[in-house]
Length: 284
Image 1: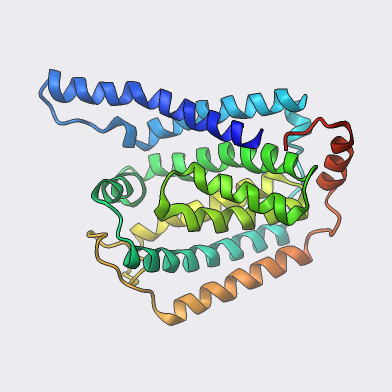
Image 2: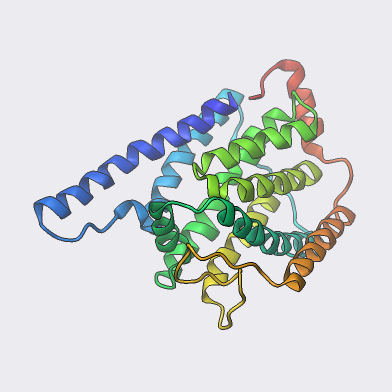
């Protein structure tokens, strides 16, 4: 059922992208103008994501016979939890940036992937639209589906570690990009641990937004950090200074420790899911 929800989200995304591709052809061939690449515009991508994930979330709620408030309870986020999430995910962003450098050095991305990353993720223009997509829309829609419905259901049938890893794999696969797979997988595991520990989707949304905000901030930093500040030519691979990698590791470990210390050891979501498992009402 979890795979079905992911496939539904992907299917709706593809279906809604077809009219954008047709519009590109009409503008380029019929009007003899440069194609605007509508499928790469952050605002349009955000609208497509809302509809695609919204459909999958609605189906997940219906299959589980859950209301929105019951499925996504509004747990209070303490200041210490916020600090732990922020410190750990900024550290993770630094480490995953270096992991991305290593992966690209072994397997350079094709030209169309480079162009897509430049326009959607790395462009210094349209920062507001990228904030809309990466910091607002993506964290809310993806976390409601993956941590709020899929992980929630898997926890009723599997051990927490198994449920978290399965959800993280599905989360990484959804991105349909081998050059994002490792980063998305690791991020999914960390966010899944946050959810298992706290039972709060809001914490996962916050963490996802903080992580994605680094993607917006790194390209517009006023100083150049080799390996972190993207260059104009993504085919050239640079590695980060060792001290930056070490700082990222320290921040990741420290942030996870802070979050663990500030979160009760018995999250209510597991107890609730265990009760639901006995009635067989959860997606798993």
